[in-house]
Image (cartoon, rainbow, N blue to C red; front, side, top):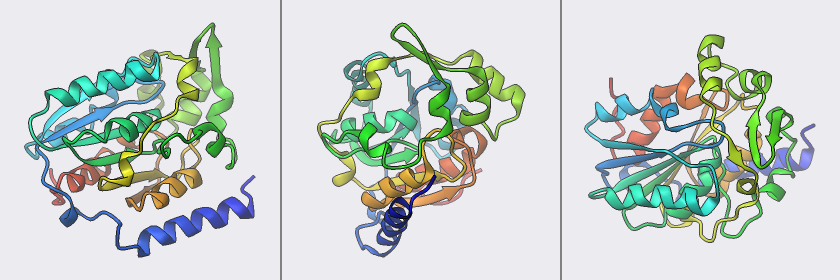
Length: 259
């Protein structure tokens, strides 16, 4: 149940983001040549397949990281290796859990802006799990099952709480390629927060049943991000790829709508 405290905190954060001059705008960010996309739990790099061609049509070089979902250090290293191959300014984009990776790896001098898509956005050293517990628990949490150290979503939770606005046949394909994650990922902490020094952008999914939408609003407001809200499930990058691509293009200094 949403408490008055969490509601007031979220509304205050959104209001602050709208009023403070530090909020990112397209004219404030350098023009980027590259985009690096990082997926979160229960997915693989192909989850960006609807966004990638829209960015490529704008002339951007796009790479989707295959996040190993083993340890935070290994996941971070996978993204850092991709960043090292980029030539010129790069927008770093994370969905869901990979917001942790964006927050840490985004400090790389090549990264010109960071984009969060219904993603975790902790501060340096912050206990994200403790932060999330100050908001009502999202339904998907109850659908995580472990086989030893490996965690997955049940099919029912995946279809209802993770990919709820996708056609069932599409959601079932995504469930079939779901990647397991290691339990230790859930307790990882970042050592720095790129959003404190880089232009930041956030897409809030208002129908999200995996990360509480009010928690998303709080994190977006705290970072003074250029924020959009989409009536979408946790998978807005698949159900509303044009809106996500447009936000990334804005972060890349190309705010014009692309085909």
